[in-house]
Image 1 (cartoon, helix red, strand yellow):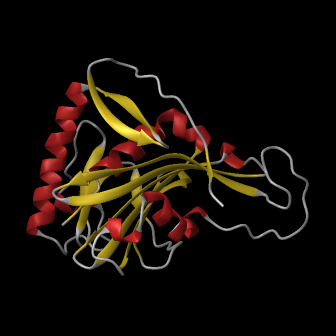
Image 2: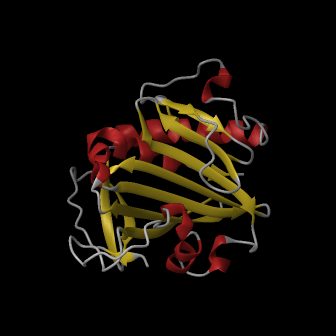
Length: 243
């Protein structure tokens, strides 16, 4: 069962803003205008690559297939089969396949706990909203958060229910639209009783296009999340787009 947690976000700047849904409330995030302009420029470049080469950069091709394209923000455009996003430059492709129907997988150069997955599978619905509300869809893909393997008895303590050694707190549920397609998005904190890494911070984005269900899952240890991974993973998720 996924637990819901609430949190308060305090804007760091009061310039441009972006509104998201957190639980049943709206949360306003601050956006640096100069960073946003650079972000929009990079997205435009990524989208053009996706449009011209929709089947380009299947697994095994890193973002450097464009001749070492780089940018001052530390991201490189990556185009997969029907999708594209801005990949943090310090991530490398991996042959690991943690989930069924996984199209590609990347790990941070220095920390395998921090990774990005893209899953592409045949969709049973014509659009993401046909799967139900965002909360209902999350229940259908809860396998992305891992399953408890321990089956012994434990006491209820430390925020864990009796006989449970893992928990998932849903910090944010929302949606966005891009070129007529709706994306369901989530922010989740998973924890285990051993306290490893302070838990795992998870970001998810999902949409349906051309008969396929596309899911991007991004993960970081909670401690590293607050040491720079948050920016990288949020930027990657916000740039995720499908053809």
